[in-house]
Image 1: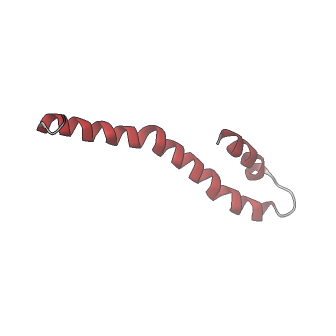
Image 2: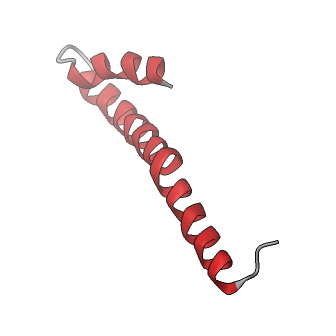
Image 3: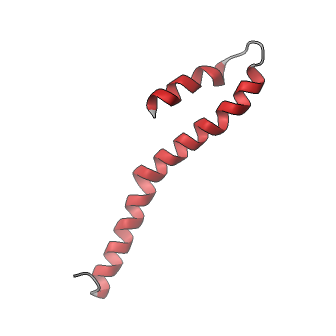
Length: 62
């Protein structure tokens, strides 16, 4: 995933011919990769911890 983002960053910074078109293609890809990384590393574990804590308080965990 890091190599894909590293490969897309030069496209985001380019200024040559047809760079406007390539930026429009690369921008959603970079944004999606960043948001999926944040989701995987922060949001899902936090939700898991909240649900686990709630279940432990309710006595639902075995």
